[in-house]
Image 1 (cartoon, rainbow, N blue to C red):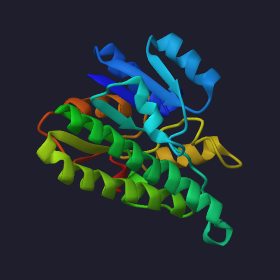
Image 2: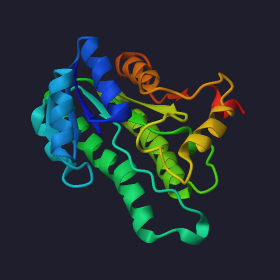
Image 3: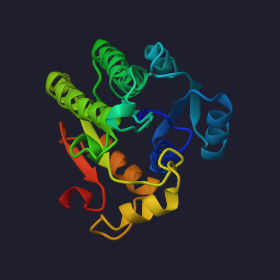
Image 4: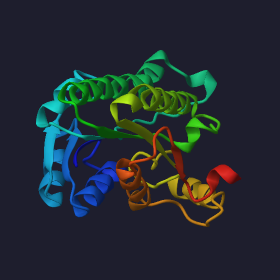
Length: 231
């Protein structure tokens, strides 16, 4: 399978690219920061394409043809209700909903035109199911991503194109290292996970790889969260 992974230069996206490449898939990572992306591509031995999923996402497919797509690019700007801004809401929607939707549309249309099948995995979040205080813009956009996944799964099934979602719990990355005392915040979050630990990028990567290749699975929402949603 040839797979495009957005947000593939760092964190969870990089781990996904590494896992897929190790399993024998041909991988191309996409991202906005050329120097970060190039360094990751060289280290992982994968292809890369510089581009922003919110701006002409179809251009990312020029490195194809692809039969796998992982919509992983993400942003997180958390704020309580009295600090919400329209710009933050627009950004979350653009990165987590509009960009993946338009990229998925172009991906599917190319597959249909070629008479080929394919697989999409959207990296959502358990916050899309159960939001936490101060996460409204992020959580709402991830909930919309889950709805997008269901719609894609339903409409594309007749064409042999599957769509699934992974719902990570708390995974320490540069995006989660926020606040006045990130270590204390992460420790408090760790205690809420029934399995007793925070996630690692590799935990999410293995789930994404499975969903990408699970030929009789579509419309699934796989929690990869150490049991956090059970609490």
